[in-house]
Length: 111
Length: 109
Image 1 (cartoon, rainbow over the protein chains, first blue to last red):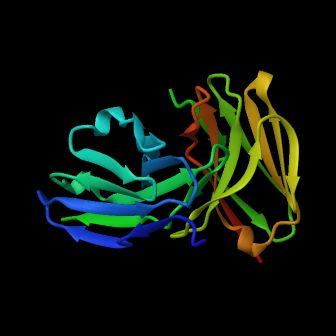
Image 2 (image 1 turned 180 degrees about the vertical axis):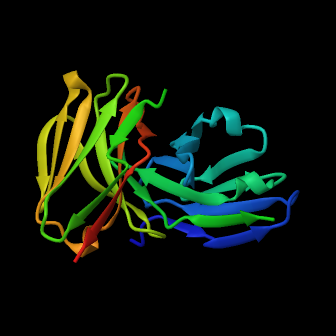
């Protein structure tokens, strides 16, 4: 098992573009989380799925951020339209109910 | 108010010294976890500690739920222990975590 995988590892976007980040959780994990990590804000929860159902949509992030989980082995996070303040590392994590296992993250730079 | 407070924000030690990291919560929780992240690296779970004391190698976590605090002790620190240590508490028993801002640990030779 390769653990949680995320693609791409790096993304550069122009302001206003749409970008889609991808995540494959650990096989058999029912919980999937999307986070944004910045030096100033630390880790912020964007979305939380349990058994593919959206449990938490991240409140303040609802407007331009949309996470989907069409099957138990794949999730996407769409940011539309991107803004320079979205520059951050986006982390995906999965869990079987105890601890969370994190992917390597996607580093996004919005110009 | 930040619900999870970590101290110190940064800590510099000589190799072989012991490190003591603290985490406190503004609300009660039933689950505390400690994570580690090297610069540019993946977040990795260290200890999952609901209460009491738990040990893993040179790491010891002590959580006192009724006092809303947890600590992480690293004995005989090594240069490779350098990085950021994050504590997180479980919120509302639904596996969502609320995160502290981390302690940056630097171990010098």
